[in-house]
Image (cartoon, rainbow, N blue to C red):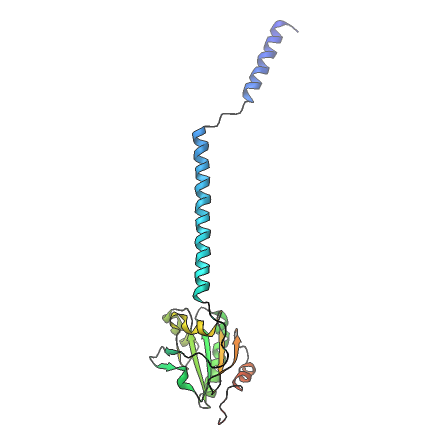
Length: 208
């Protein structure tokens, strides 16, 4: 190989080695990227903590001693029509307490059934009381109008009754005997006439 060729070959090899050398990272840019990543992790962590505290708060808000047995917890409700009702004043009658909400999809299934039975039973010593749970008044009234509900309904203010009755969601229905004791409760929607009739048989006044 000639000296000229060897020199060209050496020069070519040197250029290849130079082009393969990685570019230097700017230390300032690298630190900025690290800080950005740390900030993102910190923000995500704060959000997780916030969500956790929110979940615990909601759980504590609805925490109760469990579903009642024996004498049903007393409560007072002012209906959407302005009537004031107290459970303890309904002794001697069978009482159906239905917890519901306008946003509750299963509540739509049982609404027509409850209304039909109310019309049949209201003169037979059975009272239906609807307790609107975690809802907006105008939405609740729209729901009642949509299904033509005529039995007494009112908002469960601050979910007091819901906590005392230990509900974990809606719908849930309690059946109170003429003696004021809890005879049964149904978690979830009432789906058939036969199912509701069986519950009502537990709370019918003896004179009816």
